[in-house]
Amino acid sequence: MKECRFESDRRHFLPIAPAAAYGRCEDFVTNLLPACRDRDDGQVFIVLSHPASDFFSLREEASVDLPDGRQAGVLSLSGRLDGTTQAACDRALAERVAAGVTCLVLDCADLEFVSSAGVRCFIKGLKLTRPVGGGVVICRPRELVRQVVELSGLGELLPMAEDLSAAARRF
Image (cartoon, rainbow, N blue to C red; front, side, top):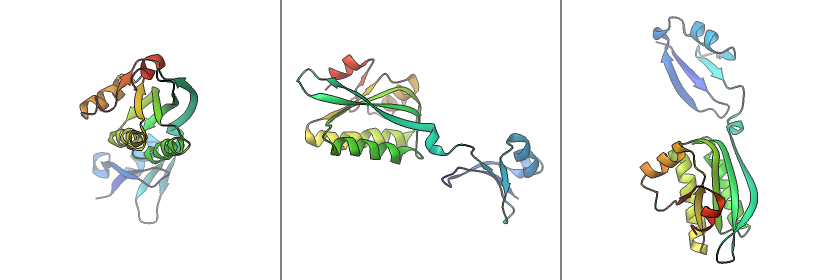
């Protein structure tokens, strides 16, 4: 039995449905999305029109003053933070810490989705900043982000704040 699959630009494969569920797999895929590609081995793949990196962005914002006189770097996250985009987030956090930023405020107001891989990125930020006397605070999280962090049991390790001034007080 042939299987329909989803193919991202980074070659991650996720099954959609067995062909038998829709008759001819090619008909289903062609009707579902126009960007479909047949391969020599007979499998049909849907190709994303945007690379996975378009679904996540990280922007450095102005720093915020902390009560003890230090400054925290503010990083604004948007889109989806998952296994496909985690490496980009990890690199950005490591670059900030290497540049001397020890306290990180992750502004998640525009972060639409976070998976367990995204939570691992937050934890990596903690592992990088804590040894140098810093930390990570999640600022303005959407309800989904808040739930993922809390349900993972990391609510105390990853403090959350409703705005930048409240985030500054959490360090």
